Length: 418
Image 1 (cartoon, rainbow, N blue to C red):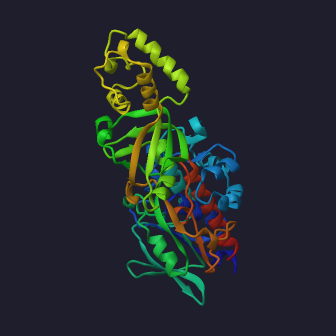
Image 2 (image 1 turned 90 degrees about the vertical axis):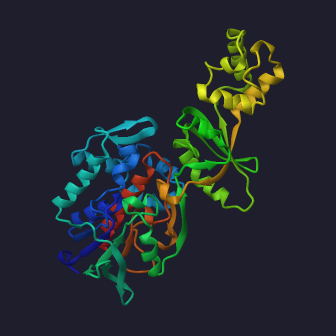
Image 3 (image 1 turned 60 degrees about the vertical axis):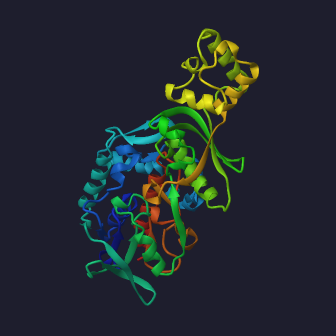
């Protein structure tokens, strides 16, 4: 088949879909990009709190390590289109970038809209036919080969190949409503049950309501299963009216969801408020503070150590009372405080709903996808990109990098294999 006859249909104008359309068009195909929402890149606009953490500046092995859901599957596509390629793409299209803490890469403008606009501008430059408000009902095949799609309106669009890049089931308001799972399953693909990843956690203890909105930095969170440590993260967290959120909580949430699925499991979050100090060092710090505030009550003697809202919580968890004079505290009482400060424990009851998750774990089984080309191993002419597959990572730019790498591979190989 000659180059000018290649017709590629991309379903879903998220980061993976737009990159797939760009790469297919750059390789000479006529590309139609179908999007159910009014504009492309709806979810991309809200990533990174509206700043768009496009990738991470770590090397490829480190990126794979941080894509905890099937990261090794991405080895080929990541090396073919890595973080340097992503940065170069945006630089070439008028979006200078910067590297921040944790090697996170952002546009210098701190505006996700600039990244979306750059991709849409490139799509227009390449003559890609972008059709918004055009949801796809199903993917058509003939004699075992993909031949096009049928839209919800009943219109049939013919194509040499179809790239399915409709996202997962998180943030349904952005168009990710799980449609891709249904379409892939109809063609014989196995769907690993979707579940939330990068999602806040709900707790049994209601004291979190009294500290909602309080953000903590430089703390360590450890997930416990029946008292045994399972995973830990260091960094920032946030208390909410329902439980906990923030970067370290989101990173722990995938493991939390797996643990909560076990019948009868007791899942807890242990918070070390002072992880830089050994118990002995923390006790010495308490003694210094108590000497400084020796005429005060305990509730007023921890102001240098803790945020005001958290003081009564820690005291209560230490089985002490705020009214106790600090000059009367025993060694045993100080040890109870040290334990409460380094082992503040919450019972995790469930994750927030999948609709509130930043990323979906689960999706099309990657064992049924060629890791180099993103082509279906079951249906010729079908390709995948992005969150519709069972691939997910931590926060830090890893998920967008995965989408861009998969999209680039799918876009190129759908043309090369036509």
